[in-house]
Image (cartoon, rainbow, N blue to C red; front, top):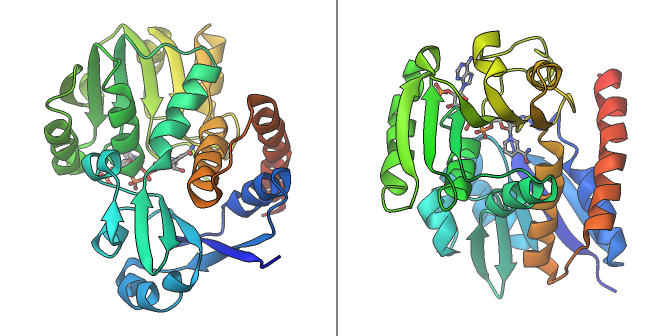
Length: 282
Ligand code: NAP
């Protein structure tokens, strides 16, 4: 059997556990494949696209290339085009196809953890992850408030514009002017991520009035934000479930395979240990 070739492109890639997750997913379907890490800066994407990336069966894209890569691929699926970023490319017969599996990864992780997205949702940040999550929530939520710092305003306006025809009412506010109560608060910023685990963006008053708090960060597995929210009695969810599900959806696109919840939950548990091992080591 020919070994298929996949990769993750981003910069820097020191903290990723994607190769671990993808190898576990390949194993479940007995697919012989490699999954390499390719450190590629945005300014080198064009050159690498023509050379290395075209030779792969498919690849994932992470920070900071999720938007820029869209300039190069031949075809982008409808939802990813509206969302404005892609994290998965499949190469087939000399053509490349772009998708965003963060959207379904997020929806699957919330559904499996019985989190309702129908109320008032607040998303911290307006970057790539906030785009995908806002898009995912926009068909369910009553309101989506993008709570941002000043420098994110243009990005937040873009999200507001792309979601203007969806059922949810979309608003933009400064993080400092957040109103409560909040049904679901979602951290889509890197604040609280390794190696700055002690940072938290919202104060106790806000946290006390959140029914549910989701942090898209997966390293550490449980951020300080989630620990505080849990202590207040809120429902909580970290970013690891989404990370594993978005990888499973990427493999569905590449290899036409499906996964069951039990197998994915097992990989989530193993990934928790892998994170602990990797980040204690660094
Ligand atoms: P990004 O595109 O760089 O966006 C980050 C956003 O956070 C930007 O709007 C940025 O503001 C804002 N931000 C950063 N520091 C801030 C601060 N101190 N105060 C207020 N806002 C701040 O990154 P991303 O791709 O969206 O990723 C965000 C996080 O989500 C990362 O931790 C990433 O690991 C995680 N993520 C997880 C998954 C998963 O599967 N679990 C998937 C994707 C991303 P500016 O606009 O001013 O720069």
